[in-house]
Length: 413
Image (tube, rainbow, N blue to C red; front, top):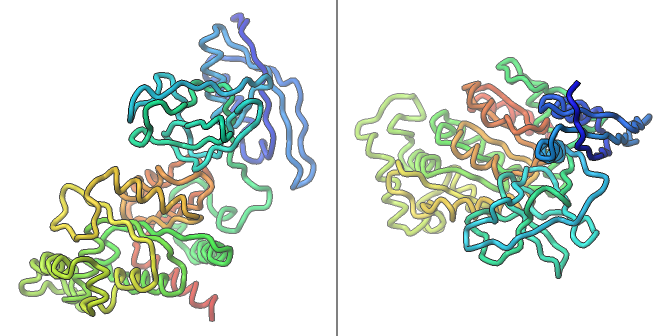
């Protein structure tokens, strides 16, 4: 038997069995060549009673042990003997120290002078900036870090809080498994999603919609407008395409030059999207086009009228673009981050892998995420974020939105 003289003790608290945190940590230790001994295990006997486990972790080398402790720490384990978080100063603007701690999207605590302090705005793939005078910590991205900022290095003094699966689950999560299947786009699931949206709205949380232009192409714009008008959408992330084709449909009744009424290409229709962009550019902005009476309906009109936070992030292929489109990707990301941190509790991501993944990278793990696309591979990529808070729906976006609106309208009536 291989000798493993390097040892440390970790502990776990919470619903560690229901959430599979304990078995996942055991698997991680064994898969990486380590060994462990459970020193203490107390299992909660009631649904609201947490469990506790104390484990000795063993490794053949000090380096292997540090690697094991880093991995299990990201799964929710904490060293029993915890030292304060170590920091180094950022060497220059936009550069982290060499051994910076890379965050997950889970809620995280850092030990500052013996006190466990929550890290503000949890987000994956960031660093942690420390203000010892104020005893605060926050996630900071590479492009926003400034020279001289104290940044956490190593994993000592860092505690990740696993997203626990409650023993009594909301219907929407109890119904869904981890698999992606077209059969799951059924009335029971849509009803559960509708109920979750009602819960978020009633609690004052924000619902974010992320979508591509196919929403307009499929004739589902009216359903999104209904959601906006009835308070189910507080933010919209999209690109130049959705806004352009929405405005095209308002001005010309077409999307990509095809009539939304009868599905027939219109003469000169290939010019409509460019003429729509030109009209808005002449007005100055989408808001100006609404205020001047140029736009009287559609998704963008509803967003302006109902004060929805809209972030239109551009890409290299855009025509125009519309004057509201943010062409600097870092600026667009910063604006998206501001909206997400403003209280988003549910994200409905439909038929836009590009904007969906970009948004998913910004969301804390406890934000409910509904991923809808006709292509299973897209849904899998969007929803594979390591948490059970994701609902995957393989379905046509038009049919999904129609059923969702019918369910919400029925509940309201």
